[in-house]
Length: 308
Image (cartoon, rainbow, N blue to C red; front, top):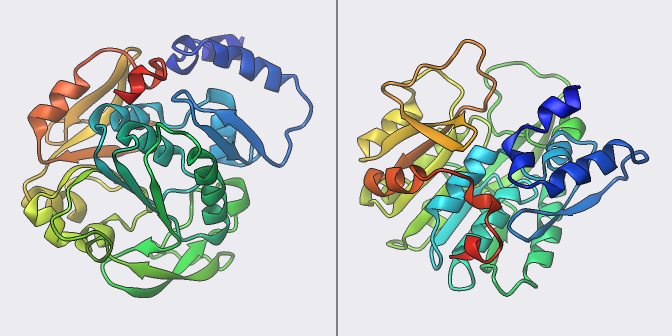
């Protein structure tokens, strides 16, 4: 009964073949250490199915449907995209297919294990003639160049999305720390180069990443920014963006027919909200609202349509 109810999700209705994949896996033997699936936009991805993010891909065939849809709708062929905190590359893969061979994707992932997995996945995507070239760096972005301590919580093996340069002021004696190289976005991207889409997923270090791109924010050379913010608004992150001319929206799952955007000034989070607190900041709100007003899920278009 529980399974039948879950199959009403858009991840299954708009990609019915995922129902068969899930049922096969539900009744299959114990998951192996690694599995590979083909994402809706045609690229394969290898993951660890017993880890939280990998388990999500295994069940749904996609991660974070609303945010994935935003990348798909807002990034255009030929553009330059940046993925900060790429993990194994799920969002990177969407960027690569949307930007296409005339575009470019730059990605950052400082954790050595995750970077190795990211490199593996990128090596398979390079064989696809429709994918953009991807430049991967085993570094973290911050507000200064140098080195820093990446905190790796004790539950990392069960959830590869929890590493951070931020301790959040909480003592965590079981956490491990890895020294990683850090740099700034301004140092890595040529001055004046336009960034069509910037995704930041760094578990609380978003402000420092943006401070390291202050010149680009001020000049408007970054059009759209996708980021998480767990604190009550307004925050230093949202204030920095608004002070630099950005309009910010909360991404809400909203309806079965697509994600909904709400201006942060009017959004009221429900008490039982379970969705990740994801936001879009843009220098072109008219373009963004026009792109996001269309019904449906473009990530489930056929592979030819998603490239256009």
